[in-house]
Length: 581
Image (cartoon, rainbow, N blue to C red):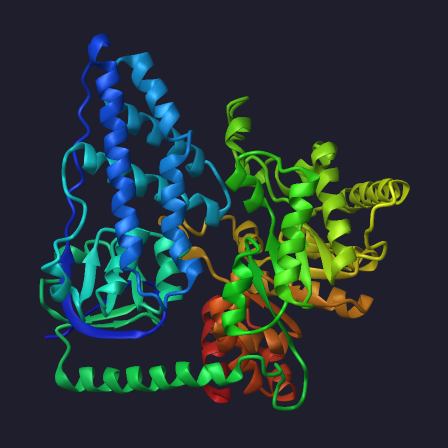
C-alpha cells in the first residue's frame, strides 16, 4: 500500500528511486582536564585535526565535476575559510589554555558561543549560517575522535540513482553526493535558506526538508517518488503512479532545456507589456551566476555581506572598489545597491563583545536606524556608492524605513557626502537615484508619502510578511503560519504599488515572493512591473511572464483581492495559474 508524506520542497523536480538511509553518528564530546605540561601537545592535536578536516574538504572539492559553476564550489571555500578563522581556531586555543581542558571541549564551547550569536539574529538568511559553523566543528570533532569522515569509495555505486534520507546534510555532503549522481534527498531538519537547500536548487537536485522521523517512516531500499515542487513523497508507489511521475519528470526535463532558449530574450507579456526582470546578489562574484541565466541588471545588492565576511567596517575605498567591480561585471546593466542592513541581528563579531544583543533583534537597532546612529560609518558607504555611480548606472536603496524623518536625515547625509566629494574634486553621480525598501507595515501604510520623495520603491516581502503576521518563518513551531497570500499582506503590497503609480515612480519586488513562480501571475495582475529574483529563478519567471496576458489577468486578480480568507485566495491563485498555463 502506498503511503504519502509531506515536507518543505526546497528544490523543484521529480526523483524516482530506492531510499538510502544515511547515518552519521555524531562523536561524543568528552570533557577532561589536561595537565599544564601537556597543553602544547593538546594544541598540536587540535591543529592536526583541523588540518585533516581541511584536507578532506579539499579532496571533496577536487571530486566536483568540472562543469559545476565556480560559484557553487565556493560553499566549500566558505567552510575552508572558517577552518582558518581566528574566531574559531584562536579562540578555541585560548579557551583550552584558560580552562586547561581537552581540545574537543574547548572547540564545543566556542561552537556553542558562535551558534548563540547566530540564533539571536533575526535575518533568516544569516540565522541559518550557524549550520556552517556546526558542520565545520563536527568535521573537526570527528577528526579528533579519529573517525574517517569520508564515505567509502565502495559506497559510491550504492548512492547512484538513490534518494538519500538523512537527519541533515552538510554542503560538502551535498556536493559529494551530486558527484555520485544521487536522484534526490529528504532530510528531517534544515531550513529553506540553508546552504544545503541553496546548493540543491543550484545543482538541480530535487529535495524536500522538514520530514520529521523520515528515517523511521521510510525503509532502506523502499521505492520512493519525490516531488520537490509540492514537497510530497510517495513510498511504495504502485506502477501506475510511478509511470505517471516518470512522464512528469520527462516533461520537466524538456521544459528546463527549453527555458534556456529564453536567455537574453525580452521579458514581455503576450499583450506586449514590457516587464523588467533583474537579479539579486550578495557580492560581485554572484554576477557570474546571474549571467549564466540572463544578461540583466541587479535589483538588490545586499552590501552587509561585505561587512560580515570581513568582520569589520570596510573603508570607503574598499567599498568603492567592490561596487565598481560589480558594475564592471554587469557590462552596462543597472546595479541597485542597498545600504547596510547591519544591526542587532546582523552584527560584526567584535561589536558583539562590547555588550549584549537586543532582547528582540527584529525590533532593534538595525538597517537605516543603525546607519543614522553611526553617521561616520554610513558616510563612507554613501560616498562609495555616489562615486561608483560615476562609472555606470547605479541606484541607492535604503532598507527598513519606517518614518519620513529617517528619510529626511538620510537625504541630509547624502547631500553632505555630495558636497564633500565636490570640494575634493572626486567624481560622483550628482543625480544618483534614491529608493527605499518597503518591508515594514508602517512603511507600506505611508508608501504614498515616501513615493513623493523618492525615485523608486522596492517591496521586501520576507520581512514584510513576518512583521505583518508576527512570526519567524524559519521557526518550525510557527512556520505553518507564514502565508504570503494572507489578505493583509496583499493589501500592503497593493498599497505600495498604488503609491508608485500615483507618484509616477517604478515599484519593484526583491523578496522571495518575487522569485516564486506560483505568485508571478498574481503579482502581474496586481500591477508589479519589475521583479528582482534569485538567479536560478530568472528563466522560470520570464517564461511565465512571456505566456501571460496582462489585460486578462488584471480583472481576475482584482476579484481575488476581495477575498477575506487565505485558503480561498490560495485556491484562486492555483486556478489562475491553471487557466493561463
